[in-house]
Image 1: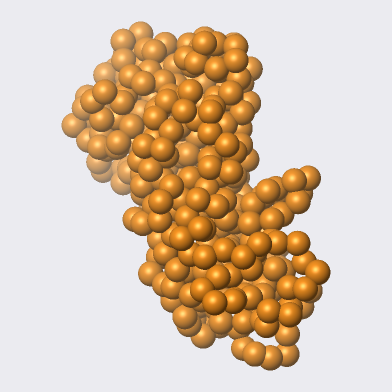
Image 2 (image 1 turned 90 degrees about the vertical axis):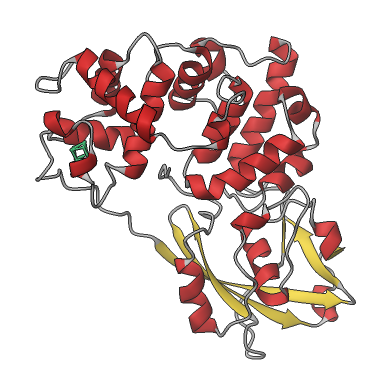
Length: 371
Ligand code: SF4
């Protein structure tokens, strides 16, 4: 345990008392759900790199479509990706699906409640295993992510290595309610100990915090590579032409997208221009109306709006269909609450408006945990 970090019992007591009064009401914490390892697992995977407000409607729709491990394991991958479509970071959905199948094959359909067995499953690392086992099974395991690292570093007054943070949280963890303790840290990082302007006056740990006034400098934002992309919107009757990305594509394999163009056509003007973030790339993407002959020789299919409801679309294709055609896609795909209103806007205005939409999902890649 680090020096001047407060008495272990005192830290846990203060955090738990604060959590009982200020915990966020979230669907996976509702009575009946909090002890369900499957629901905790799904919520934790969705929360990786994604804000709570974005996750909630996706989570509710996902667990309605796949209420347990067996339902998820038995679903075709396309249905799982369609339910995830718009949430981004699709390898999370693929790993969730693969893990569900492994749980059915090797653990009788119930999430194994041991750290070794959980972390042997696809997509489950130390954080997710700690969260699931502490919240759903009462095991005193830490769940350390970027938010927790920030809190503990500020309490210590200096940047700490992940292993030092994990050791400190381990030392604080109470034997009773370790899941509440981990969730208290998650909520503290999301609502009080914010990256830029921590509300130290309302923090239950301010009495033991070394950095209240003088915060350690935050890690500088990584520079994003600016990329331009262009796509063709080909329509016939009430349908659009889409192509499926190759099964061996490094990213978004098997998902459906508009036809990419090698460059911006001289005419016409784009129907819409959007900003889209994928890992270290900031993409400015434009979509252009193109004639039917533009798809000659391209492998793909025609889809009506209704048919697209259960098709795994890339996040960018989904945004384009909303922005250019006003299509809202219901059923098991993107939840209505997470969609922005359809727009048909000039290029420059579209770029800035979409990049500033607060509820926009984070795109198809990235690395930061956002709760
Ligand atoms: S006192 Fe301020 S900086 Fe310290 S843990 Fe609390 S919110 Fe974070």
